[in-house]
Image (tube, rainbow, N blue to C red; front, side):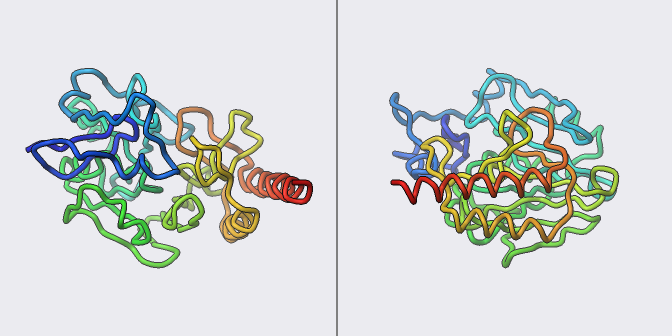
Length: 271
């Protein structure tokens, strides 16, 4: 039996003797199946073809494969008591990566923003003997069920040590962010996946329902998400990909939401 991994989204599936006919994650309009068709790999193949970079991302540590794997996101190690919380997940987990993470305090828990980054989360949980915290609103997208997965209900989960999860919805019903209250020298750090997503111009962020298919969220959803984020304090924002974090992030998110809503409403009024 083999745990197959979709090459496009890098989500791992439960054990079976042949690959699934299709990947439901990529067949959904928030992702895509490439013109070349559905393809599969395994963790052993990824280990032969790739290795991970482990490098600073602001005051945090990023982990991500060299060379594109799946969507191309990187994960973050967040200080959490005497250990770390892994925010989001990447498909490649090898012994070199595990040893380096253990040297830095290991992983005591995993939290993931949304289903596109579920990846090989069960492999990580087994290697570090820790739970995975996922919003119950996205339970249907779990392709490899496992006892390590703990579904949380509602809009907020306090994980202790000044770290909590906030469900924003929008991109997926359970799309969530991580709030690190003591991050950024006590001014607060916000970790997202794709929502809000830092743009190449770090003075702005974006709000999308489908990034590869360029489908925006409706204006009322952007307003709701921006309003929810006014309830917390954060100076810095890290989203899903390698690069410098967004600073003055609360103001950036609010300003970006206003611009985004204005653009949507202008198009709606003239179209």
